[in-house]
Length: 560
Ligand code: ADP
Image (tube, rainbow, N blue to C red; front, side, top):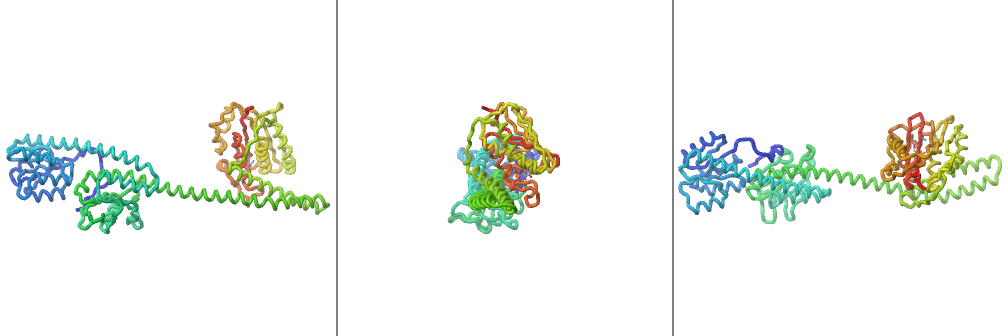
């Protein structure tokens, strides 16, 4: 017997359809009387005048909410029939009709969960009252069972959400399923190729899924609905036992079937409607958790490979910069010597070799600095220092490059010294990086201006509010000094498109590929600038328009 139940038909609310009653009495006149009375009261009635036929009706035409049975029937007593009915569905209400009532009979009836009995002959009203009350009791019982089930489901949900490890999760899901629906064995299979379940990922030790069990799982999986089965063949083997009943529930997340859960036992109530309801609800939670665990697993492995890649990159930077240093100092040393000892063309050539080597040294130094940041080995030397003086020195250092390009380099610095506590050398590196970028990315006849000002905190907040995010801005929530010393490097060069502005602070990122653009560099400057600024609670931001120019601002907390 197979009975299907789509998860969508599972509900915890009351059932609106008329209650179904099974009447079992070998007295056909009695059957007809009860059937007429109950049908008139709005019940759906199935009648059987033999105990055997009633058993078949219970199995094949159920579920019934109520069994109304005569206590004395040839073959099987009404009480035995009640017991079988309750094994099949523990929630079924039972009313027994009896000609004579002994105390013994009453005890037996109570033991078998009989809700009420009717002494023959009884009036129509008595019959209706007894049936109504028994159904009312059943409803109350069901409500409290559902509440208990909901509580258990809630605690299952906590347990299920406590892990993101797929294997562990499968074990938890299966353990919870078997706690809700006690069963000899349980299996959790993931959706495999060609719609067939594969990979038993959780099963109790000593249990083996047999071919018939796989078929049931495959059926539930392909149909996408809960399937209860009482098969002819055993579904699984657990030590010496070979249960033939099973309940398979597909696991779906976001309309996609991700696997199937199969519980197996010989108990008749394993395939009851209540068990299917609970399991289907659990399946919804389980499926989502499994799906999340799967996504988390994929994300985690992607993250691991990215981290590994990052480690390799850092290692490469460390080795390359270290290995380049010694040969580079030899090249620079000899180039300097040759330049100083020679004249004419030769002196000129040696000078160019030296310039080139110095550019390589700049890159190697940048790589070393990044390596130091990564290993948190950049120590700070904080002391009071006039920032205006520092800006002046950087300008002096770079004015020749700007002039060589035919650019105008202007500055607007405060007249009084602007002294603050900072790491002078690191601040110098930041400003000279920003200024050399401005020179690099501005046309020959362009203008560059360096401005130094003292800003109140609110002005800085307003200025960064529209800026593209970068790591230095993240610390603004924590760092709230009253005022800031702000160095602004403004150019009317090539500018940076809005969608690139958040990326230029990434390591090795360049708006135009270094292979195609005219300017040199490897895309490390702003990454270093960002790290250096962060180290001393400084912030950097950029305002730029493509083909219009850029303003890079570097702000340090103004505190003494
Ligand atoms: P590099 O200068 O070595 O390319 P940076 O990290 O200093 O690397 O800069 C990253 C990218 O940001 C540059 O390649 C360039 O595309 C862009 N950029 C930086 N400063 C400016 C600027 N003042 N004007 C236009 N683009 C700039």
